[in-house]
Image (tube, rainbow, N blue to C red; front, side, top):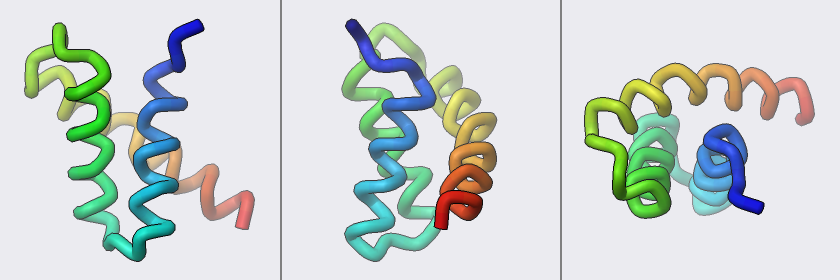
Length: 65
């Protein structure tokens, strides 16, 4: 089964955090991973998805900590 958009972005952000990256770099990592995993999406769509899901993922990460 293919991972959901949220799972893809969560994984990328989590890995970026573990690497000590700041929030800007975490978003960039999420954008890069999503672009690589879903090459049929244009950059504007990928950016929109990351912009919409990143705050939710951060809120979930803060609640889990």
